Image (cartoon, each protein chain N blue to C red):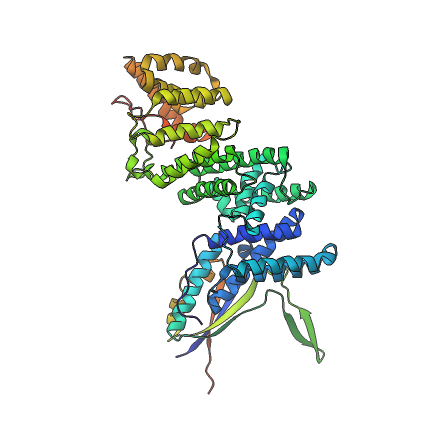
Length: 117
Length: 438
């Protein structure tokens, strides 16, 4: 089955304001989602990314230019990712339906991974 | 990935928010409350990032504490002022983690350092520097772990306004150089008075029929009761007045489940099915009442608790000891005169001594401007007019009561004792409306 990358874009403002009780409910829902997909063998990794800007690399005149990531100004930051398995986009979307990350005001970018060969 | 998510205990994050906030405030000082809140929020955000992937830890509280420690020390390293204190603060965290893994429950009855911290936090929120109208919100935020949005929704207030109020309250604490240490002697007594007022207000807000979401309001009332129970368990703060308020809140909470009929309509005391009153809460109320009797200072909480206990002890509205209720209202009015209490007394007089006596008691209240737009005054008047065979005037008074209720005037002056008024049945051709104060 094809694999899909879930890029989780965080709404930093919403996350800063969420109450402890709401947080608990989101985590419970989130953990349940992970459990469910893991039990189906559909999760192939996922990490949380460190809360900071990271580094941005470009090239200029043959040299690598490094800049600190724009964490402070960004309203939206990629907080983490998952790789899941699904039959097709429709099924991948269905698996993400009602994902608690969305309840937090974030958005999920879903991209199919192109298999090699 | 672990299989089987251990359920997160109800209110766990609220509890942990309060616990961590109190601990960090002790370590960093009340002037750093804003920083403390940021650290606690970041610990939760870390949980949000990790637990879905790694599974919920077996000891969630310990996990949160460890993360809070790291983030607090990181934040402090960036501040010159704290450089010298870092080792001491790290040692305090070690101690906290040791206690945590030793299994000291956050709700243990006996004093533990976590308990002490929480208690001091409650007292801190009622510091004289914090404006009176910010204390309830501040307590809910930093002691009870409610979010700004939840507080706003419970009070039907604007979230931004609540947020600003909290910012100002924290700034006041910083500017007053408020200390975390427990006040002593007269200062402690004064602070406790302020705390009791805040908890009474918080409970009442949770009790009101109109304000905010029903579930949140119930949580507010439960939290107020939880906090007064915490005060009553701690030797330094278990004064008779605290027990009196604890008794009062227990008696009122005992009736919560009986307050609504199946259609969601609020039932007055006389209509409630007393079998649905919570017997264990009533027993708790009487236990607190007994301890409240020690000491020589009679507070309005004492008398209100006595009133509530008289209702709790009665098998029915008809079998209530109305004579003692009238006497209790006399005592209450002597301690804390209020037109609403006087009106409640009129209803008790009607039950104890009949319509004529009640009418005489009502007469001065008809000239009381504070009650002019108070629906219950007109409702009581209507009932007594009907008793005295003056149906047209009774109907007019009923309409006035209904119109005032509909116009929202009720919302300005609701008192939780309102539910103690009898259901005053309107004459058949007047629609009394469905809005109820309880």
